[in-house]
Image (cartoon, rainbow, N blue to C red; front, side, top):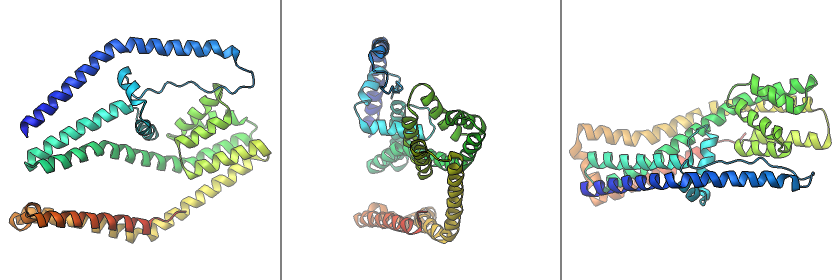
Length: 323
């Protein structure tokens, strides 16, 4: 097994060195290609019809190394990873993030084999190490969404006051970027800049829902689009929307109070078996060792983990109430 790990590390080092050498020769040609494409698009701009909608030209690279970027762009899953990273507010690119996942997997495999002295444990630690960075990104994404939902009614109130004071809708968007904290200010700043540089307001609002796939944001975009197409008092619509969002928050907090016992039960049932096994390993290792050595013990471990997983999702489905 040590020889296998040494060979794996040598392969990784050689691959990284090869990609670095290739990138040195490929980087200039890639930049030249990007410049040629941008110049070509600028030359074709006068040929477009005046009524044709112009979209913003973005160059979102998945990796700073051109060869890896061209390879990663062929995969939709890598693009989905980049979207999750952007929604989490992380500036790292998907290519670098996958490299971090690979390094974490290798480190987990080495640590697992170092302590467990078994190939099976090393493979499990390798899988856990690979998933761990993505779990962290998903956690940050969830926290950022929660922060956005908390500050979103304040942004709607600011927008309603600006519209009531006589400001244009686009000007009111700029006011939100200066008066509301992150992450709301950053998302509305991008919304304002997109429509400022030529993107139609409708498309910019749809991009907001793509970056923030939340129910409240969809309500906001739908209300604004209906008002722009059919008319009406936008300030009054925004006030009502802000009131509805705040009432939803009140109901959600009440639901969390009512489901506290279920969440505590789920945490207790999920944490008790590993804690008991760890305690027995410390007090009486001989008593628990057959669970990890005997084939019947392996079967019982798999059955126990499976039942724990089923119980987790069952309890979570019971206590999760949509508001």
